Image (tube, rainbow, N blue to C red; front, side, top):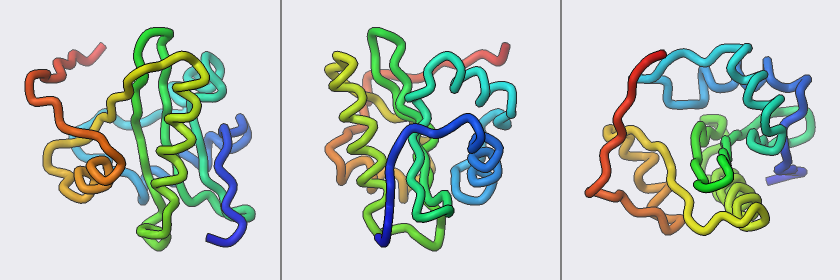
Length: 140
């Protein structure tokens, strides 16, 4: 993996993260990301957005959201050319470490039903679909 570093994103990287998600993240069936929303997340919880960088290259992201009660994972994304190299594993491990440090006891991951590749990644890391729950959403 070269000189891979996994760490909290810096404010100056937020624009690059938005650009990265256009090609590396699952974007179907979800509202568009915006600079204002990402900046608000970073301002509220600067440790939530975790990035993987190799030198100056952004190669992965995950949002490890903690609301003081529950642990939520969003936007796990790895550069298409760098997949299957352990970057996703490193991001998930960093997110779980963050949650444990904050006192979290269980994490959930947001995964689209038809994203079979993502299902395999999450399952390989011990996550299981929870059939008795459904996510209900309302645009604001």
